[in-house]
Length: 462
Ligand SMILES: *Cc1c(COP(=O)(O)O)cnc(C)c1O
Figure 1: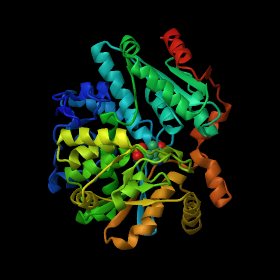
Figure 2 (figure 1 turned 135 degrees about the vertical axis):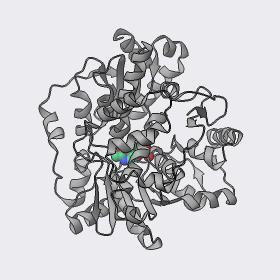
Figure 3 (figure 1 turned 120 degrees about the vertical axis):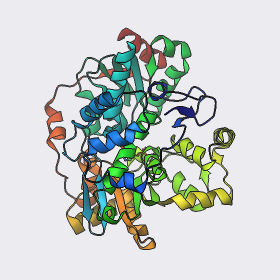
Figure 4 (figure 1 turned 60 degrees about the vertical axis):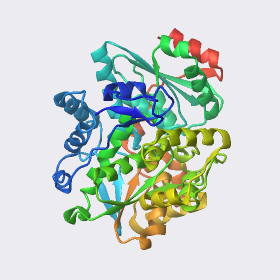
């Protein structure tokens, strides 16, 4: 399988090079040159297979430059760190399914991709006798999942900037208690925007970037999307619908459009999916897009589901590429319009195509807490605020569709204790992996919000 850019000026790239490239050199996103299609018979054969086996079968279709035994090793190593032997268990709550994607080391779904990406980076760099320095800014979940993905790995150093005192206590502990030599937590005296600005400035210094082999681990890396395709198949086979290969609707709490994009690939590959339902919070550009064709950027507002407080969904460009039937000129035009006018216009004809695939909801802050309480009262089961946006979508849309619903649960409720307590007046059970963090040794470097100071810090530690 070869990869190309959504903007058309990068073509014929191998998987390994696509992984190292991250963002395509022409500013676009890398996509496979074709999407492998699986017959119903081939898909059926995945039933009763373990998570790792399903992963191997799906991933092999997209990777032709890593031999099977090596890929198998990487896959098994990546999911050994999960607490549940199924990796991703699916439970039933009343009349819908919930796919628990949060059993990895940092208790959020990002582990599924970042555990894999960390091992993949290590393998590729080792083959090439090369090294990589990862720089990233985080408002919480991504930073910890990235750190756990690459801690202790040969050839990789990671520098993660977070706004000092502005991430949740649990998220801060998850990052700062990792003491491996290759991990550098930098607490910036400033906001998340300051952190992001500093990282952007560092990356735009091309000389600095080349000199130190800087790389990023953000959600546009193709390997992250690929790892996420797997659990759409695996979740499906844990439902009763799989017996008759009936269609299902997937509900996905959405921010950067990475998770649901993987569902889009699964559908394209032949998995019996009816609708992909985009669950948003009050940052609802994707909801406005689906319902009214209004893809216009507004200001980001703070909600109880911070990992979805995003207006520019970076993976959306990949979907556009398919919507425009692979016409890169249209992608370039649209992204230009987005940059200049803060919106993209879509024809009625295109919106019809979009709505054949997607539906969407938007959940207010108030409703978010209500849903957590409703689910707790009814099933004695606690969901986190991100997952609750998804369950709100199930409750709002269940009657409009005949197919079963699978909602994606993206984080463990103990990561967002304050919101949960606000909703139900009780604390969720805290898993041992989080409980023990309080007593662990911590290491964090405190810096002023200054590009040159952060650069100096990086140089000193390479
Ligand atoms: C990152 C994240 C999301 C959003 O996922 P995207 O792939 O960015 O759409 C939802 N919930 C949680 C808990 C997350 O960490």
